[in-house]
Image (cartoon, rainbow, N blue to C red):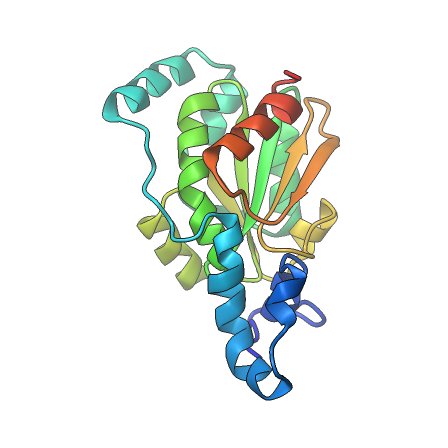
Length: 220
């Protein structure tokens, strides 16, 4: 069984992914489980969260329009965007400080890790969502039980458009009620309270857009 060397017990890489895996993913002979579980979690079960990662679809014109809208957005949203695609702090304190500065704005918090296949699959969806909604909604990442080097390499390969908090012990994610499934996405209202928690990855842009409209923008 593949384990996350950076996790603190009882939160191993395989245990977290098992929370998101459908039952059919476990119907393996016992002798094959140790060899196949990691691959199944990151590949077969990852397909339920979007399969092979695609590239963001936002055009250069869309990005330019987003930048112009962001320039007129509330100061908290502009400040939140300044360190996009970087690790911008570590631990629960850093997360709480960032969320406190975003009070008054709806916030989408994505718990991810470089070792998580479904996280890799959905990152381009978030990149496009930030382009579409970054002037109205704050996006923040939590890099869960990951190595800093691996996380930064992943961000360089697939920039999501938002800043992330390093969470090597998983405490920041657990402070929001996460840490059970990778990925997990939290929707916070302008008052800072959790409105909705999405366990597992988004299958497509339509599903993510629907949740943003409903839980971040308040459109039923």
